[in-house]
Image (tube, one colour):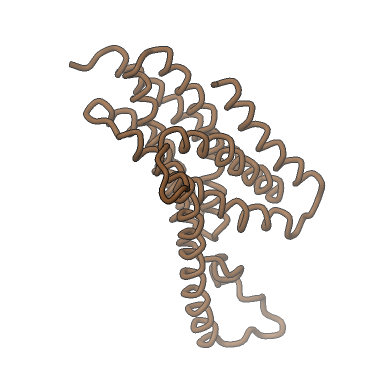
Length: 270
């Protein structure tokens, strides 16, 4: 029989839904300060990985493999997989772009530049990478919902603490989901679709705990793997892009502010 605590988990997940949408809306509205948006997104992602995901992963997946914590091995595996996927898709996209360009007539001297080429082709990024990364964010948000449900099953106090952490950092999740999808040249409608999927994921995850729970070791391994992939996107893509055209002090301050915000969230919820 479903009790009060389980119903509370789903209700709290609705708060995560609204916070995720708020984060995505913020990223959407400040496109005229794109370098600041990317700087903040990179800081939020770095903070989530280093201050939230990895500590939880080490705590949940405490086993070692040949003297190395399993969570750390999966963290490295996630980083490498994200790198390989991006390189493979980028090579495919570059080949497709070269073939497409070869069949185009050269622009006239008085005509505009080749603006019909999708943004993902013009800057060398594969839109599929953005969609894949955003899908991983959606999966992570679903696991956040599972964490809320499991915590409320353990007790109201534990549930409230976990819920506070999840709802607070879901603002960053929504912000990052929209930013990552857009950064790789996907159309706004795709970015919005991924944002809404990310917002709904915690509700779905919390509702799923009415029927089953995930073993702690599996959850810890997932957090480590996802953290590695997220760190790659922050360090290899988001932050370099933020400083490429606007190497301003304000961009760096936004990155530091993003890390500090996650630190505050972890400290308050802990």
